[in-house]
Image (tube, rainbow, N blue to C red; front, side):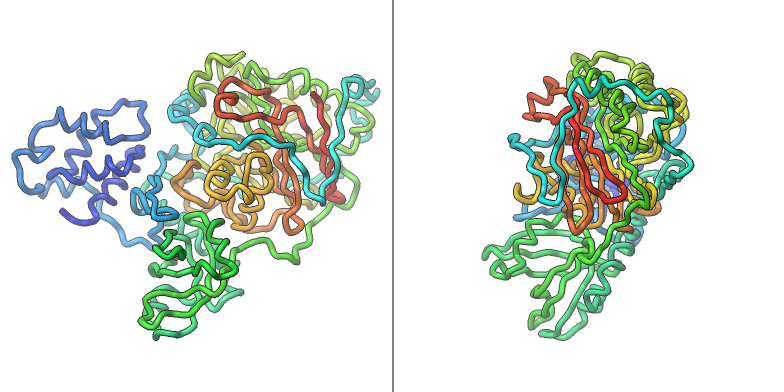
Length: 582
């Protein structure tokens, strides 16, 4: 049997819309007729299944005829080999295997995720329910115990809006002193209407090649980069430098770290000695992120001893942009209308406050996803729903949106609870949902999007990958109690979801929409339901909490949410005040 058969099996399963366990792929490849075995397994599994397990394969093969399992046949047939697609030569091969070793040599799940096609077509309710048959990443995470969020020294103190504040008399004029003619709001990096991914092997190659090209440009000015194949032909003892995607991380018996980097020509192993002052940076690495290393080749030129490591990062000299007038934006996320725990009273106080004279400078409302609770997002969610129909959830959300002053400009992106595809980048809502959420003529864009508000670049990203960053990195680098520190790691890596095939479901497109090509002035996320903010190299990172009290499910996984907060950002100074409405 050809050695590449397991890879080709993964490709074929991905093309048919399935994920698979590594053991499942091995079992299929171990038959004498892997092509027919694959067909048998696909026919056997339930139509709603997204992930094929080893148990599925064993059950399917147990019921299959002998010529599939190989009981009566000693060799694979020519017809069977023809059933599997030929493997093209990849330009960047990261992610080819169904699995690869993680840190300390442990095997981590690196299956290609199930992809949803494009941004159009299909009934939105059907797509929402179908995409939820596998629980989202938040169900896999184990949040840390709550501690009081301590903002960095660069942030402003929290203020609390009492019920008296929320009941102030509204201005007699609807405009409230706001002048829409002075506003400007532009969006870039939006996948809506641009999605071309089909889940075919070539799409994965394209997105990783685009990621490498974009991020390597940010690193090549710092090192004298040479391709992997050129380094392989160099003499032992020579100085070398390479820019590549992290293909593998494992520890040696002596406690050193072996990091394998990959570029468009091949791979090369790099050894980080445990006693080097930068060895701790290995703990911050995620598979598939782009880094640069410099070092010296071993005597046989088979490995590079690393002397320094570089990330794309935000330049320390970066100076953020500001608006040329005093104007503010309210940053909120995770409203979760439809949940029994949606805090409607707190939202009402927030909306009332926006009508007050004190809130006249607030001319923008930026919502970072999860407008509604959704349906079938986590186990037994139906027991915690106040509204069980997805369309009614959005209709109710739209009614709450009408409480916001009509002259405030609203922009929102979807999240993992919303009725869009789960794989990122997520296109904005379809026309049916846009019509439902027509209040204020809100601007709806994809997740992520770079939104330039009066010259200030705000990177809007819902934040599903924060679960992965927090799970993979040390607690002092990323935790649920300090979500902004996990955001610092994404800024350092210049990518909102660096690791492929883990908790974050990623869609292969012709280009990588998740790369931070431009440095944002503000990075706004949600998803983890925790409030946190601070500055990283003068970039303000804000996770804006939520508007949903603790659900039974959240209690079962130890999530204690920060509810009813509205960070208010001064666009002319990038100072921020957090107001509380519960």
